[in-house]
Every structure is written in structure tokens, then in C-alpha cells.
Length: 261
Image (cartoon, rainbow, N blue to C red; front, side):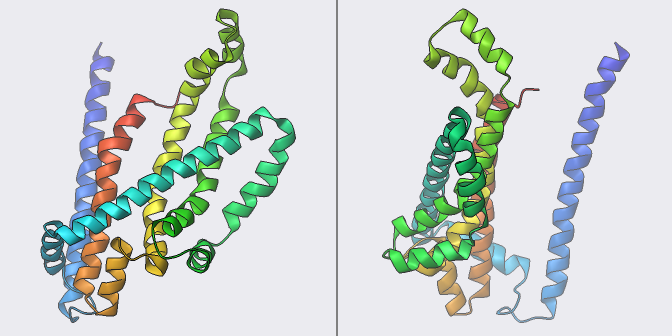
């Protein structure tokens, strides 16, 4: 009984220590940033306070909110499409053995090694500036990340569980929904989480090269006018949006569907 009571307490202490160290790291980062910026002009490196002030101004600006919404929709749409395509490729590779070599030895290495900036430049050449080109770039880069994670999920499915499911029902759809899909869900969520973070970085590159709106477009405007304060404020707004989506949506889903061992 004493050991059972001490384990939650130890876990609570470790959690509190981890949070303390995390907050301390943030404070140290801000202190180093503030000290470094003291001897530099604002157009080179502004301090934390001007950037924070500008960030709060942007969060009340309807134009900024519109551009943030556009970028967010592009990211979410790209992640969903990439996971769908990656999931279909993983399904084909694990269902049809003849296609495994084509997908995992040809398609996956090609997509995984093709330069990200190459997709962005090709999209700028092939398509008009707009949503389609940005989404195309993000999807093309995200597909291998989704494919790798979901393919790993397929390979980790216990064949004995499938056989046990067949002893209860002969309906393939029911077996797929009740067993396969539930076992794959943690890997799908992992693919979505990884892609969600990468998509924000890709979105900025794609929007810089060929988009009439979005946060990348705002960063390009700030860079062209040497508004470093606005540039950094937009960067931190992206961090805020990412953390908001991760904490409110992805983290609860990961707790709801943990990886089974």
C-alpha cells in the first residue's frame, strides 16, 4: 500500500520538476534575448517587450487574423490530405505484397529525399499564386512522413488479433473497423502531429514564393520593409497557433488513443 501511494506522489513531483525546468528555460531564453538586444538597434534584433507588444497588436488586427486563418486552413487541409494519401499507400503496400517494393523502395525514398524548396519552386512555376500551389507543396512534402508512420502501424498489427476477430465475425468491414482501425489510430495521430508541426514551416516557404495572403506573405512584407519587430511577432504568432492546436486537439486525442503494447 505504501509503495502504491508513493508512486503517484513521485510522478507528481517529477511532473512539477519538469514544468519548473521548462519555465526556467523560457525565462533564461528571454533574459539572454533581452541582454543581447540591449546593444543592437531594433531593425537588427528588437527586445522581447517590443515584440510582445507588437504581437498583441496583431492579435487585435482583423487583417492579421484573416491571414492567420488562411494559413491555418491550408495547414489543416494539407495534413489531412497527406495523411489520406500516405494511409492509402501504406494500405496498398501491406495488402498487396507485389506493391510493397514499389511503394517502400521507390515512391517513399523519392518523396523523402526530394528537396522541399524544389517542390516550392516547381509549384511557383506550374501554378498561379494561390491556395492550390501552397497546399500542393505541403502535401508533397508531408506524404512520406505520413506514409512511414502509418506503414509502421500496419506492420505492428498483431496477426493473432485478426484471427481472433475472424472467429467472432466473417465481415471484413467489421474486423477492419473494430480491430485494424483502432490499432492504427495511435500511428495515424502520430503522423498527424508530426505533419502538423512540419506543415507550418513548409507553409511559410510556400507562401513566401507564391501566395497573395497568409502569414508567410506578411513575413515577406515585414522583411521587405525591414520591420524586424513585426517579423518576429508573426513568427511567435505561429508558435502560439501551433501550441494551441497541439494542446487543445492533438494532445487530448493522443491520451484518448494511446499506443498499445
